[in-house]
Length: 296
Image 1: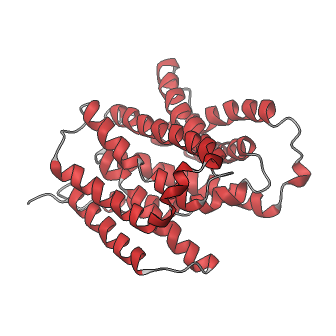
Image 2: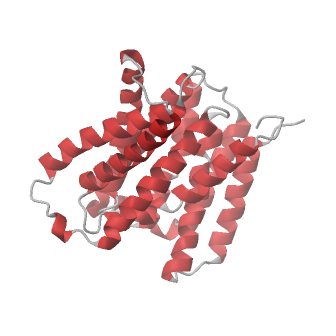
């Protein structure tokens, strides 16, 4: 981490860890009655609208030019259309525990991609931190590891795997662009708006018989929550943090998300928190510390 304490950076990473820890639950509620591509379309369109209003108020909305638009198109497709969209589809069939296990591979993927794209050097410290955090997630859900081989989950596992790889590539690509001068808010508007256009086409093609009357208020509320907090707030914080620290330092928050998700299951659904969970939390905290620790 930077030598001087960056309060905004710390706050951004805390928000990402907390908010994205709730999105597993939010997505599962949203797709109860709303088809996944419609869910993601509405989520991204609401997010784009909110940011558009902010840009108008700040008098910063403008055309970014074709080269910059191409960059935002790539990020939009990788991180919103593929990563967010396929995760939403996967949660139609995958249990939350299995989803958390597979999603926890994300820091491992980003760690390997960071080395491959020369964003950081391979170190035992980085490998150990990622391994400790991933071990913590496996410890929480060790009884459900066999579900990965369940043939009923193979489609969901495939979609989620594509989503994780896409998110990793998007994170690396975003980091590659982070040193260039840009308006983060303006970039996010274009990303969300482009994603909503692509996803509405997919929604109409793949869900032609969907009826709005069948969408529950609960699912609609979940989509609005995902748009405001999961997209606008958390995505802004994620991109802000990514400009200041390495991709692996940001991605390690995936493990924190898992802890939050399990906590919510305990708090909202009366799920039992066992000693395994406590051990897992300790492993995850140690992993986060190892990755971020630097000698003075």
